[in-house]
Figure 1 (spheres, rainbow, N blue to C red):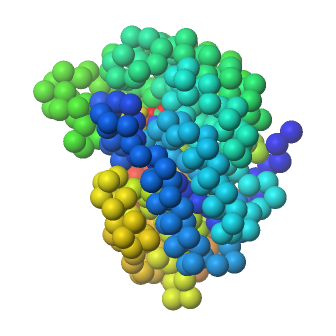
Figure 2: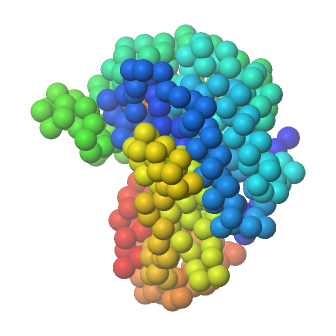
Length: 389
Ligand SMILES: C[S@@+](CC[C@H](N)C(=O)[O-])C[C@H]1O[C@@H](n2cnc3c(N)ncnc32)[C@H](O)[C@@H]1O
Ligand code: SF4
């Protein structure tokens, strides 16, 4: 039985490792992911990741690692020995919490599922699988290389190998009906995973889907239908005991992603690998860090300088306050106003809170936390903008 994640808990410290390579580029994706026709020099990339880890460790002495997350791109293209080498480097550089969460994002091809046992032996204890859809026609439309049968098989392997696993689905897809999504989500919930990430399809800049959308060739749901997709998602997941604990993330209480909670609760994390972000505390305040995005350029810079930060800035109190709201209000637990004051150096405007409460967009809990209501979540960006103003 999972232990519930306590509110008010110290968000803690985590490590994000970005693996930027994919076998093909999905037409909706704007993540920092790249396809290479030649085999990449995995050993060199792993050595460079270890170098960046050593650099970040020098900036975060004394922290205890609560979570490590391999994201991408497609980290399940990595050899298990590479994952083990990175985890060994982390173990040499920082102390680790007794139940450190180690997550790896995986695509559900048979080859990748075949590596799950080796990943577990390397120290991974949770996988997050990019299923996206259980329907072959839609998987094709999404440009995915796997089939629904591959996804089922990968989930079976994950369930057999790991105590904790999650999978991603994308909904509100072109031409998808709410009825079809209802059936698909019911099937997904019947798989019995205690964590699910359910993302409404968004059209991202500089993607093939954006071009198709502009050309009128992608029939996307209108706002009313988008709301119907959202309501169906909340209804079915809550009924199944996996309510949303964050806008797009659902878990049985206690099975939340500890890593992502570090981001949303505005904790500390370092990011290594191409295009990785970090937020660390220094005696002078909170710093925002980001690395060079282009994989081979990142590699060259790290090999020369030991790290490839292209952004390393102190955040102003105002910026920290905005980030804190933007992150914390994504969570159904909401935020602690006193922590906002400590971070932002100012109080939230009581008049704004009152008017948002009157409009039914936010709620103040008996413990004094401020959280977005069920009505407010579908228009979260507007609610946050209003509070942050
Ligand atoms: C870094 S990606 C996934 C990792 C892995 N490479 C994969 O594709 O399965 C994280 C997740 O974001 C979601 N995602 C990416 N682009 C999206 C978009 N435009 N709209 C909605 N969800 C998106 C997908 O569900 C994806 O699994
Ligand atoms: S969705 Fe995943 S597999 Fe597809 S391009 Fe993006 S990171 Fe790669």
